[in-house]
Image (cartoon, rainbow, N blue to C red; front, side, top):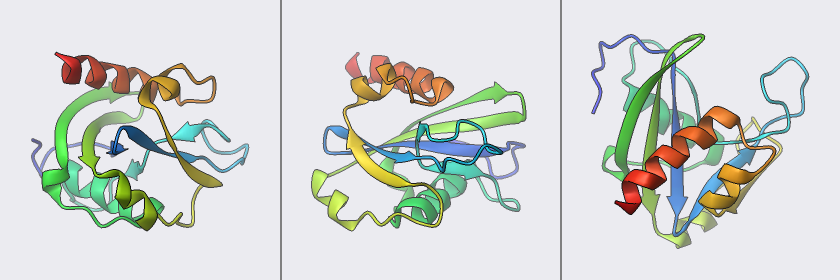
Length: 140
């Protein structure tokens, strides 16, 4: 999917547990982007990790889920103001939701229908846009 030597700033994962999407409500701190908004697991790159490793590490840190790379079924990179970022999609059975444990970041987590996320007024707008792109590809 991506190269470990590629220059990028971070990665996000649209993780489906059954038919629903795992979302995390961001902390309500005024010094972070989109405080209180519904976010997807992911974040900034550490060291020289690959985009996949970044998305999987962040998902473990934020949701307590240890995932294997084969969970990732779709990937796209795009340019953001702070550099290139990766957006992944992955699918697991609904029962995995029982294993989710909120990490140190975020107020709470929940499952949300992907269409609901895309239309939600507190969805991070550029992640909702990327998710829409994936849903179109998935439906084709």
